[in-house]
Length: 509
Image 1 (cartoon, rainbow, N blue to C red):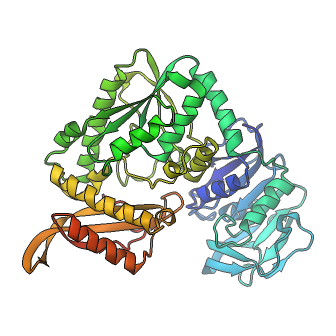
Image 2: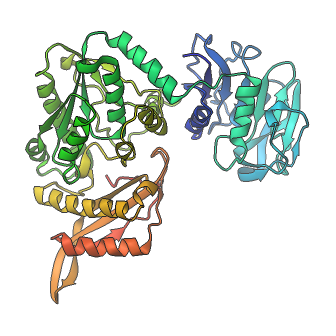
Image 3: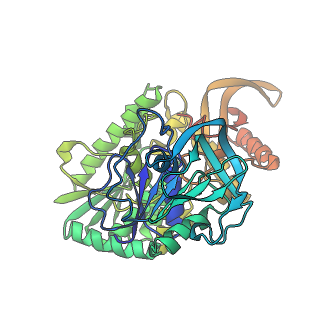
């Protein structure tokens, strides 16, 4: 990969956003922890230093050696990065009298500075820091101020080093993309060559070299990631790709048959395995969410292993791992706190002796969809909402029974089909129904009922890391509720979840 941008992560919650904005400029970038700077910097054309929850004045503040980068590569230091360069190079950083957080406006911009080309005074920016730069570093030249932040941006004379105390990567910085483009394209001269077409060509070529004539087995889920991975691999190795689609009995209504039919029309070599009875038996009596995930994971491995053994001489296991998973595994503070176990294969047992191939490991979710479009995968499949690997098992709170699965499949089908009929499906990032472990009193046909409660959930998001609940029309919710209660035996109450992530998660378990 050429024309890379290196993003050094100091632990900011916004670091992935920086990478996403850079990728939107058709520029390839990689995130590396500040304490794991690549030894070979020859392919990098520019460096961005991220923000951080740390204070540069703290004893445990991140303090990397930038001697191999300074004056050799263009640098854009964001927030903590800007304070770091000032604090350790003759400037002064002090605690702000008030926490500088939220929207601000540039009140002064120095004339004829390339970093602020096509950005005018009063442009809105987003601040998020409790320290502030009181004095610039040696050879520092002020480029911009806000009413409350004198040194909102500066550069260091004699080198291509720029620093800003605001976050250009967040949407609230209205000219943030322009600033990043000014730095990367006009100052650092990075070529804008990172396109879906270029990724497909490069990846297919790499897969051919990596795999050769060996056979690859891939567990398809019917979701976007595994489908795009399958089509890329098929383009590279053709008939040597063997796909397995397992029905765990916890899919959406009629999904096993419909997904297999879709794949059939794509020319993929797919074997459908109906193991629903096996999964439901493994789940019998288990109510704990982690217990359910582990039971499903173990059963999937057993089923997958059985099917993989039917294919002779398989050497590779393909997975739909994407970039956020990779970043998390090498984050500044190590892997993130486990909120819930990952359902995926995530490294099969050693006895399977398969080498792993992950063609999407450097892509964000939205990039996966763009690559899928480049591969001419059906729009309906690419636009599918994410669906949890454990399926409806984590949307049925409490133990799993065939009757509960039936109820939730019916409810979910009414909800999802309704979203499509009302032209709301594509405006929602993810939607689903949850079967609650409570009964409620109702009245149907003048008779008392004591039946199940279901919750509907719809969120908008870009990548699932954060999410807001969707304000669905009341008329739609009213019609959906009535349809569910009238048509699904065993349900007499419908509620709507209006929790955002954080503090809630998208799924309930």
